[in-house]
Figure 1: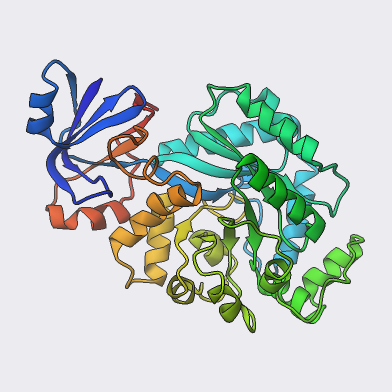
Figure 2: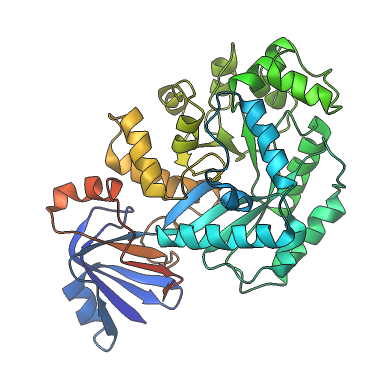
Length: 406
């Protein structure tokens, strides 16, 4: 057991604690409170004094593609989403297995460097994972499912992938399913993913309503994305007359609790349809990716007003300058200056923890939660602490995972 003292502790489960402390009993938090009171209660315990710092929960990146870390700066911003997809596919054909493994390792190191202790990663090459060492942070690997190209997806394949993690107890995190998007994944495969998610208790995420080209493809049966996918041989008979959101919801393709990445483009009737599913799904916004594509304003007020909790993610370095959640909070705050810093911090801690089904165990500091936390330098007033965290531009002084320095 170790007692970690800091000038200010931000539990997020409660108010800030001046001259606060956290007790880490192995990988679990055993106590959070005033330093003097915890030291008296645990008098024989060693103390780590973090000095003039803020101690807060480790950050959670709710949407990331570590495979593409190697593509940083490789694609100039382009207003055409389908042109970006084409370029991604061209770059992927030039990469070796070793390139992808280095890309994943570099991405994990960068996430940890900026205080992320948990990441939801979409893994497009699960066959490479047998060559990976245990990840340095808590990682949920979401098996990407597509059937626009030849790949075998059955319940047995999913069960086999799940057993991969059961045989690797040193890997912190878990396994989920990610039907890629309604334009690359059939409704039949979505339904298989929903069935397996519910049967095996795995989290489920998908890209949805990401671009105006996706909206046009499903609503009008035309546009650049429609033409691109038709050229690849996709059956386009499901396009025309409905939005991507309606396409999935009316088909019952999404399990309760599905994590929906992007949700940038709401079409006619979508708001009323989502109102009927208020709180049934979690939503992830990627501010820097959104800015990269020069998209119309994210419908934050609409989605929040409908009762959906919003988390933040970085997406990949193919559409982002880095994997830094502080940067994402700052970009979001520029777009929505009226959002309180406490709500912003919840978007990278408590909200994604709840989306994963780990509310109270990740994303906050309380007895029984995982001892994942970080420290930032701080010399200001307590009332300014939340603003200081959101505006932080330096790597954390220390990052802990399961009570150990990461």
